[in-house]
Image: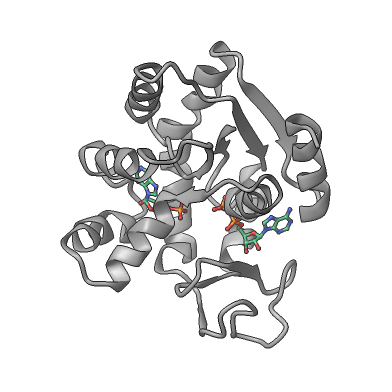
Length: 212
Ligand code: ADP
Ligand code: AMP
């Protein structure tokens, strides 16, 4: 099963991708998490990515596409991609790479959340840079404030979740990423869920799309 998560930053792609990965036993691949791990590790890739991420911009396709292709190269049983593709050239590269192996994306799931809900979601998001888990101070708090339930590391407000950066990220989303909805509609693999519902209800909608 090859699944893509579409939706604005903060729509809940990562939250749902984790649940999908667990239920269907496929890897959850988040380009944002890969970049953040590289920033934490002080790699050259991380340093390059950070300048773009901190400004709410996309990391250039030349960097992102190669990185993602390396990561999925050995995933024969499928995956759920979270945060990739984010541009038409990224989507075209993925389509082409899969077609060369006689494969295709099976589902592109658009988690639909209007802009007015996004700022609240992002300012309350707390991230674990250790294991990639995501919380929300109101909608999904950790058991112990500021500490990851899964790995015990300290939770942080991501630099790019500050309101001024979130506005920029939403602009970038509308300009560069939203056109992918039509791209995958034309490929006849688009499915939509109402992302304003509580997390479990959103997941229920996704299970109805993917099947038990
Ligand atoms: P994305 O991966 O699309 O950027 P996340 O999955 O990290 O988004 O979710 C953004 C924030 O919103 C997180 O703090 C998360 O806990 C919270 N969140 C996710 N889904 C919902 C939901 N259905 N209702 C309320 N809050 C949610
Ligand atoms: P995310 O964790 O998905 O919210 O991504 C955080 C940031 O990482 C984005 O705002 C971009 O700067 C960068 N990023 C993640 N995925 C991509 C991608 N597919 N293309 C370009 N930049 C990306």
